[in-house]
Length: 240
Picture 1 (tube, rainbow, N blue to C red):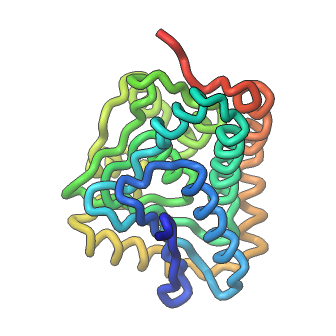
Picture 2 (cartoon, rainbow, N blue to C red; picture 1 turned 90 degrees about the vertical axis):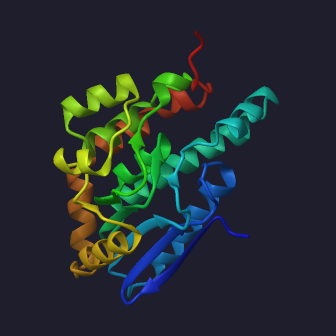
């Protein structure tokens, strides 16, 4: 069974995570990148909406048990390949030549929240789900690129509080702080609003991608510079 799929809704690609809590491991990263390849190759696509089939979760982030077991087994090559895969996903979402809208239909924790921050716009339903960065409680510090992606989407005072406290935020709180475009009543409302918003864009890919590259030049440099310092030595966890 695939863990990520996509289909077209008119000229919008609906990219769907479909593995329950959607914890991110190498299979997830490979399938998501493959779907992005296919979407980018379809010149008819004018927007992307990223969401999940799970009733409770958008994504609970990195599969900590999986990555911990790989490190315990000294399978560092697989861990590094996964981290590079995720950086490729972040960069692709950031620079994708059409607007990318996250329809956050449930909990978005850690890397799941960061993926939504890499998107251009975010909607979230308010009847279920929290948005948070629990890394401070589980001993997994953000990589510099992750920090930069969150800062792109979250205003600095709120960013500071969320990163250092692990505080869970509701859709209404995120809307009030400009993190999401709209807090939606339920699942149907979420998808209706996100799809309508995405469909309103009909821009040429060339200018859209060039604008993103110029807007996010500094962020991409941060992402590229972290490889030899954090990923190659597997500098991913902090001991007490």
